[in-house]
Image (cartoon, rainbow, N blue to C red; front, side, top):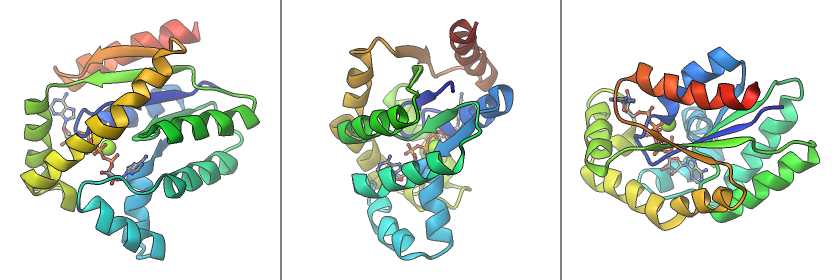
Length: 192
Ligand code: AP5
Ligand code: MG
């Protein structure tokens, strides 16, 4: 398996680029944000609990997202690899992911980290909030809270993978095509 973490702050383009990367490399896309939003749409108890946390721009508990990822790994035994988007987001999530992949005799091959200025992140998210229906995009306060959570709890995840020399920074500003090409180049280097 070839496993990628597409990393970056809220609004850095993880979802946009994931859609293209999974089509090109035939990977299974695992976005914890999308999985949580499906639970909300289905009005499950987990979804209802997650919604109140997400609407404040905070992270849902580690056990919840680790459980979702564990079950997704079990349900996709034939995949060529996984593209993780929005996970792992804390140091404990990274450790849990490494353990889960090890059980499958696999590992993270590379973390691609999208670098985008804070000003651009806020602009993109509030702009999407005008049309997306994502309740966490509509207020500047919630958008700022999400970015603050990223600095407080998530940016350390990159340090964790840097210890294993697995992190590549990619400029996340420019056209979607330019960024996609830069990401693809890094993946191709590692696949060949
Ligand atoms: P999640 O769904 O993961 O959201 P996020 O990380 O906050 O980021 P986004 O999905 O908003 O941004 P993105 O990087 O995917 O960018 P996108 O491509 O959409 O998480 C939501 C919430 O769920 C969290 O706050 C938390 O509560 C919870 N959660 C999720 N995972 C969790 C976990 N592991 N642990 C705990 N809690 C968790 O692009 C953004 C916008 O920019 C779009 O409108 C797009 O069209 C535009 N855009 C993209 N690329 C470009 C470009 N190159 N130029 C201009 N605009 C662009
Ligand atoms: Mg996303």
